[in-house]
Length: 431
Image (cartoon, rainbow, N blue to C red; front, top):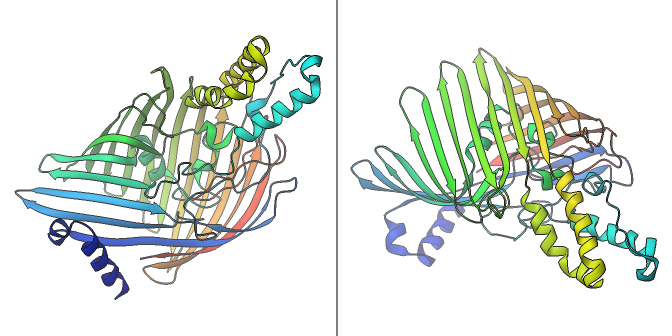
């Protein structure tokens, strides 16, 4: 009754003639739980976390049959953080990440404050590179999805903010379905956490074409205009995927290509993976290659911190700025391969999930990580389930990966090479 009333209010407040001809659906997920984790340092061990298995959300989607095989469609989906009611998130861990400023040495002369000033500058840069909010930075209302499109007899054309083609393949091959402490994406990327993301999840300002055949083959092409890409700063971006789903096999191949603000090659990823259903068993495997030679964050950080360095004058300011630029160019460089294998075993109303994922860093920093996860998901009904997941991340080199969730990145352990381990228990309701 409440859902019907809300739908009626939306129809009355918006363009009534258009909505009256459309089928509008209100949907969402409410997911939250408790997490006990050991990341070292002063990071809290027990946390209430929103969106552990699935990011909590509220969405609106609709279709209008135009006849002749044509349909108008739209989808608006907002993020909801059940722990505090906001639509933004930050790292689950409070620990500082050190890799991005490794080797940074501000040459501040004694007359300008010397070592004390250099230490303050370093602390300021670390704070700027580890903001309290790193998901939905601009506080967008519908930051998960905002799209309108036309479905035709030869495919669908969509416009707006959407999942990228390569991420769809990565998510499809993830044993823990992009959520909980066992989510594959938790260790995909560089040692700088979300700032060195290993895949573009969504893209702003994008045009997408999707097609699906009756024999189980589907494909997508996406092109992002200026201010597209994984944080809306790419000069342009593009991607494609191809899926085959039939006879228990669900296999995909995806590719994303991003650029920096000047059009230089940026975050480029390729993923091959999927699953195979065999009775009560479902087997998963995935391979993901990631490279970022020119991160958009470098020029962004240059611009954001320019006033800080300008205050040191025309002689020293450019020296300090140049030192930071060189360090970020080195530490933001990403070249890695990630793999994952795992399974589901269906048992009555529940399923057992297990996976092993590996992030192999091919740069000099050696930010290696291996993640082991085991979980159980029990359906109380078609809409509600309870889950329990335990995970262990073994870090090596500069790796500081910490256990995360669907709605938020884990952040960092207290020091490089330290392990992260924890248990999550939660409840998810779909409506």
